[in-house]
Length: 365
Image 1 (cartoon, rainbow, N blue to C red):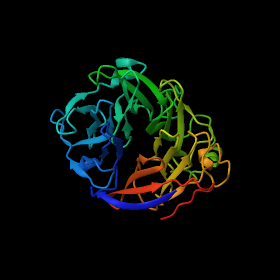
Image 2: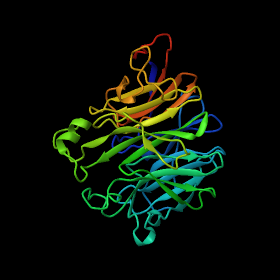
Image 3: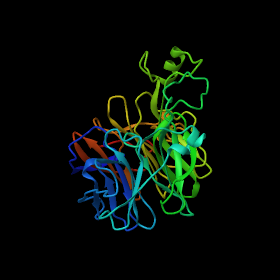
């Protein structure tokens, strides 16, 4: 992995809770959801950028764009809620004119729980639980977010289906007018980003964040040894992991040996047409790491000839030693990429490429 150059794309002036998303438009332009600055767009492969303010006239004021996506027909989609105290509301907005105007619909999420209106979800996490959109071959549009019960923090309760931050996938088959058909992605995970196998739309990998307290019957010391967390941590599980689906996101399982360790989370994932899978994430010190597979996630680069089947044992290529929240990537050309992150109040872009000359792909600044 070789970094060719880096640049400041824009300056939102904040590090905290800046949930970046970066997506290709069908016209090949690149869009970034840059939080308070709205969208920024490049039509020259990331060399220059234009700001597009976000304005949702049909929604309450001070909306925070927690999710972003672009469908095959070129429509832009944003999931959002109020910047402060907005977790009881959830909105999806759509633009058909490249972000100049938006149509907003509120998503009624409470009844999406297994108990329906009689036992509803009470909050929806979007602001700190960034989401991306998936579009199925039949046009079904879906995204996941953290839907929680009122008693989600009681990890020792008898009914163990209730506690947890609970990432839930919801779907629309009518172009975003109505949302429903919920399925649980993971009871104890959120901040999930998805990447679809270019050879099989039913095969999906997800980079997520597993976070939970001790469950009934678990031993603190045993869990601490397993997760590598700080002694006495309230959340002994608080790190990134991979999830996998073979049925088009109807169900997911944890990829074996994919837990990345304590505070190694806030991940983003890309799956390219030539079968490169790239996962970026932070580590406990706030550095930005990249883990790379050249064969669709079967093996990961670790400095050896054969690689490792476990992403947790893969080499973490350090891109920068200080950044905040997710660092999404787009492919510019075969084995050439642009990764963006927030560092020191700026959205920075890293242009880099993979060299396949040797087995140990190094990092050069």
